[in-house]
Image 1: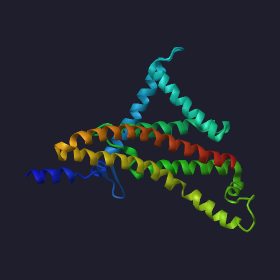
Image 2 (image 1 turned 135 degrees about the vertical axis):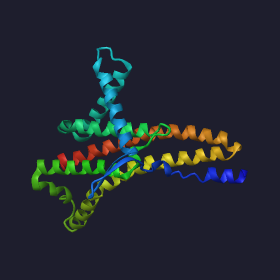
Image 3 (image 1 turned 60 degrees about the horizontal axis):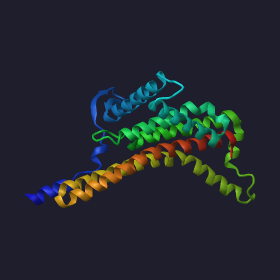
Image 4 (image 1 turned 45 degrees about the horizontal axis):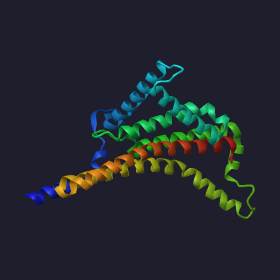
Length: 250
């Protein structure tokens, strides 16, 4: 009986926490529209952002409160990131980039709460975010430079014999951007949560493993919080880099 209990604890599926569950669905024939746990926690993230920012700015003063200081720090951090990476011209796109950053950050941090759902662990979400960035910066590049935007893929400074090869590499690299952009975020969020689940299963498998497992969970949880913030930053800084390429053709 004890052996079966141990095996049951160790057979916990660490990927089960990423299952999409429907609260209700509507079959339209050509499509099935449903409200899932992913959609629920996406709405929770948006609501948390709205409440946080509204609370921070509604009572603003010369001597900022703690919440106002945090909100202003996030605002300045993202604004400086956009300006330093893509220049002053990119500041007109700051509202979009700030929205992307704070949405990903909120989803990542809410996913750290027990029994919650990590929206950004699903590639359907991260691919949509990455494609929105990819399409936006490409359109911006063509609107500003017209057909001259294609010069981005033709390294004029390189030797003539190497330009065709480098052009192919540049095109492939450019088209791969949304793939790497989305997989990096989704894979990092999924991997950390899966490892936490596995270590939690060891804690319930044997009394001898409780203490080291709990210590491991505490350490990994702190690391996961850092990863949650870092991945929001990485996604945003890459967005700024891609925007800089579109604006300046560097």
